Image (cartoon, rainbow, N blue to C red; front, side, top):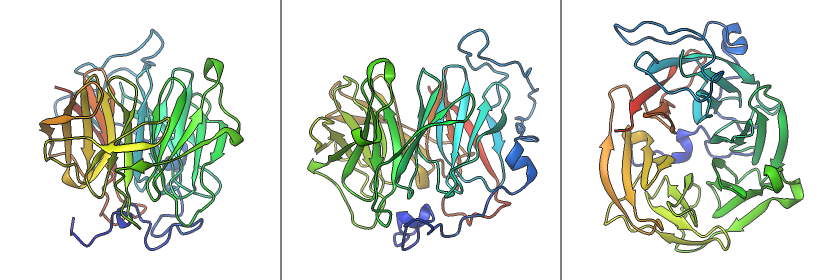
Length: 351
């Protein structure tokens, strides 16, 4: 990416991101197939055969096999950004274009429309699925977060996290036992949805808005805080700054922020994060790479141990895991989005 290309431009924000400033976005589904889910099938790898279409969740959690597709198509014009995978082997993808959410069976690579998007047409970005059949989704320049039912697509709750719609980009999500934490990319703020007994969703007036303090990396008018995860010991949060490449450790109780010591390394273009044990997988979108960082238990120090690349990467944005695979939607940031622009999802091995 050229040095003078703003990270905001990658997301189509242009010079302003207020409500209605959806610059360069398609008006809606490119075809009837896009709105119904019919005709969305896998792009089978050479020499493979299509597996059966049985629901992999009927007999418990499904695990990828050699017959599961390692690449499948999303609807043209969809503009994927976020991904979440539940424990039944179903993946969810959010649209930067209009906020639609698709649900796919990883075993078959076939999908359907779960949620048509908000009436305002604002995006669905980072997302996470919990064990209660709920999908938490960040709303970008809508300044909001939504909670969807993963079976019906019903909106169970909606939260207006920011009312300053000219200066908000609600980006990514991580689930903890007590709070759902959500990043804000245009302000040094972290949002939280505190969960009640049994995971009860909060009231709108209970939303946490945690000001970040300390050694905070923040570049005005750029995409800053992006992907978010927990530290290995679960006591703090990790957030990558897409513009500066810093990995930041945040105390969620106070907002106190410090940079993670990466031994002189940085993570420019850092987007989605995924932690498995002490390994943190950092999607670096424009670099077409997943950088693996081995963390200490507290998440204060880390060492880059390897870099995952694949010729099928076309600016992947986020990542989720199922079994021994990482799944990454190719966002194709920097490619002119049209109703006919093609998008896909690719899978790579964790090891």
